[in-house]
Image 1 (tube, one colour):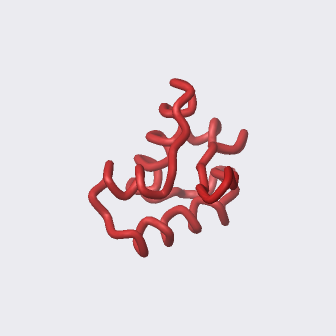
Image 2 (cartoon, one colour; image 1 turned 90 degrees about the vertical axis):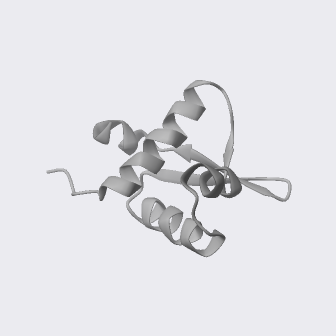
Image 3 (cartoon, one colour; image 1 turned 90 degrees about the horizontal axis):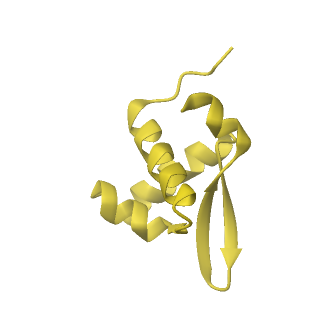
Length: 76
C-alpha cells in the first residue's frame, strides 16, 4: 500500500527524477531556487523525502547532491 505523499513533495521528487534522467545533478540550492523556498524549508522537505526513502543524499566533495531511490519510481 502506497503511503500518501503531499503534493509539494511530489513536485520536488518529480523535479529530482527529471533532472537525473537528463544527467544533471541536483543540489539543495537548486531545489530552493526552483520552488522559491528558503534553505531551512528546503532542508526540511528533503529530510522528509529521505525519511520516506524516496531520495538519497550523495556527498560529492563539499556538495550534497540528490538522487531518487528506486522506491520513488512507484510514486511517479
